[in-house]
Image (cartoon, rainbow, N blue to C red; front, side, top):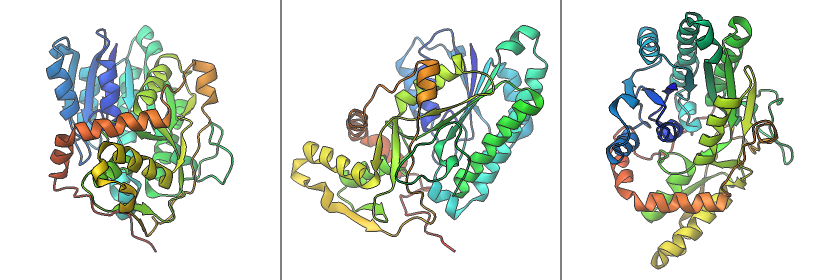
Length: 357
């Protein structure tokens, strides 16, 4: 199969491509603009260490989806059977400080990709047209915030609360519109909070690990009681590939890890793991400091994944504790990667998203 992955140098995209390259019959094309949080380091290392991955099995396009012509040319060269659209600006705090980039990347970029895909698909022969899929990967944040009970499902109305979630909701609606209006064969997924190795350290879990390792203050927003449903990256990747293979055209699938934890719980669990690994620095929980909350901070997310479990046979294989232990161990064993990232002057681990009106 020929697969074009947008955002393939990002956290989820890199893991998707790594998994795709395990199957020799796949030819993978990675389209990424290489923004501040993107890196080809993981995939370059994978290819170097695996001589079984041939040079024609993987190709990288350094392209911004804002460029219509370059996007069209990449699709024409890749000739994909499947497009997996993961390219997006994704950090809520950063969207609060500068929403314009999120509008350009997540809305305009998705529009350009949809149009390029539609033109390409319309010119395919009947057999290839029938098997082609456009898979859009989105977030549970488009659904807004939950109370103390209940979970998001495929039928939950959209209610985005941040510039980031509003831009992703817009991209979801564009994808659905291209299905209903132009019959482009799409499938769509909305996932809960991902975590695992190689995640850019502006996100909660890697940030806490590195702060604890450096014996620096660990910030927790507000009272720390905001709840997220945590999904280990390998489980998410398997779900995405299953949806690509078996998902029904025009349908959406919610993917969650049944890992509801408050931010405070997550931080304390990381501190407990760090205490075991570095007892001389224990207790790491003494590094915690509660800071001013993010504007419009959603209180609780929870996903009901019963549709993908029942209809496609997926299940999460990692408990939160298992995934977190593996994640902490990986970051501690790969401090050189962190040091390389921290030398990037585009991001120096400063607090973002304090703007309020």
